[in-house]
Amino acid sequence: MTRIRKKVLEKVTSSENPITADEIYRSLYKHANLATIYRALNWLEDAGYITSIAFGSGPRYFFPKARHYHFLICEVCGKIQAVKECHLASSKADLEEHYGFIVLDHVLYFKGICKDCKKVRR
Ligand SMILES: [Zn+2]
Ligand SMILES: [Zn+2]
Image 1 (spheres, rainbow, N blue to C red):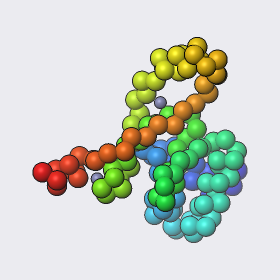
Image 2: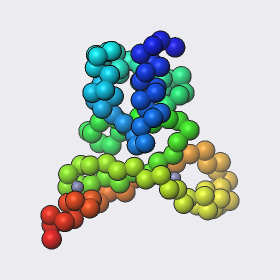
Image 3: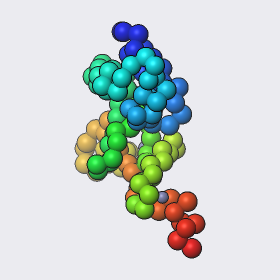
């Protein structure tokens, strides 16, 4: 693994929330340009270290493959919040029983109005 890939992986791993390429670039701009960071992220994703998700035309968010998040997407300001808690273990068992389907993973996001935008609306 090259030095820059290692640095990018460290960023993704140490970030408490999923992180965008732009955010990584902001802290690594002395070491690499944005294109290099994208290449490193693609490599890390292909190699199975990290995974990513994008919503509509928004940026792609990267996080370690071992972590699992749900997402809250604000329809007003576009902010994306990651939720660490997952309560879907029982649904998984139900799906497996009802459909005979082996569930390996799931992606879940909620659309709505964030705390800040809710305040403005009042
Ligand atoms: Zn909002
Ligand atoms: Zn979940």
